[in-house]
Amino acid sequence: MPQSSHTTVILGGGFAGLFTALHLSHQNYSHPIILIEQRDRFSFKPLLYELLSGELHSSQVYPHYQELLAGSSVTFVQDTVESIHLNQCRVTVTSGKVFDYRNLVLALGGKTTYFNTPGAAEYAMPLTSGEEAIALRKHLRYRLHQAIQTQDIERRRLLLTVAIIGAGPAGIELACTLADLLPIWYDELGGDADEIRVVLVNRSREILKGDVNSHLRCTVQGALKRRVVPVDFLFDAVVTKMQADGVEYQQNDQTQILQAGTIAWTAGTTPNPLLMELPILAQRRDKRGRLVVTPTLQLPDFPEVFAAGDCAADKNNPQPPTAQVAYQQGKAIAHNLQRLWQGNSTVPVQIQMRGTLMKLGLNEGVANLFNKVQIKGQPGHLIREATYLQLLPNSAHNRKVTTEWLTDELFQRDRPFSHMQLGQTPWLSGIATIAAGLILATPLVWRAAQPMQFQQNFSWTGVPTLLDQLAPSSH
Image (cartoon, rainbow, N blue to C red):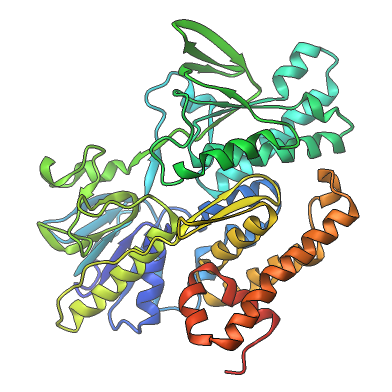
């Protein structure tokens, strides 16, 4: 049976879709809310590197939707969208169920694209979900075990080489993580960590090209060189083919092969194919096929439909595909849906970019606050994780994860590796703890003196949440 025509249907459980649903529920939205997502778990994409390395647990970064939506008014449907009928206000899913809607939210996200590179889909490993992070971790562990058991030097070199395709933020964060992590794992097996090789393969000479993080290029280049195993670069290399044990590429008009036991793909995504089937004119799409939206994130020809994240393109106010943007879009769509049901007009979405964050290795990161102040090293790492933990959906889950993380960071409890394994002395580890304490102590003073200003300026960073765990305010 079709659902009630008063229903709001949300397609996709990524940041934009999930937060639209949660904000509607928190607003006591008086109409049915249905969230349709094919996976049973939410992947907190910015922290997938921590899931890969074991710095955070799967329950923290890869929680079940049923857990996140418990106690809300959202109905979760685990199914795959088969077709979207905009003219009939109807959605069908693979199981055969039909959902009629009054309002629709398109938040289907993107799909990994291999640009028709032969062998890429078979042999390259993407990192866009918790499932893929766990699969990559298992594969890397297996390669290390194979390497420690072989006496063939050439075979071992191949098994211990990781090729990462793409030098955007995802490729750089993965390269930095693995260049610190794999030497630790291999050393635990009794291997020579210096044999590990991580190679960043890029079609141009410029890392972070055209990315919102491009101004961090110098910081990133230094971090790539300072890892436990320095990251190698293979620039101006156009990948032409992949096979089980290597990458074929063209460089300086010559075809060469990089032998590698692991190939990770971070070179790009494309909008969900379902978008191409919608009755939307070509002039209502951008060059990537994303749907052009109004400043209120509505489709011009279908105002009952909202689009966000990788589905949407606002040509007059383009936004980078980041978690903080999707989070704010979800909140804004929920607000506008509430306004519609109250008989009010929708209002333009105001996206506040508060800087960028990057992981640059184990216990190292950079927080570029408001694109003006760079905080690097372990302080940058602490701010990055605190900021993302603040964005975790469901306040109860947020508090639990934040407290666990802070305890692990400051007291090194239940860590999968220690600072000692990264070559730090106890003295340096103590200095790091003191530095973390100073980072948290300074905001405490500010909060006590000017609580309203503090909340307004730092609510996005996650620092207020951390402070609430350590020293709850009187109110």
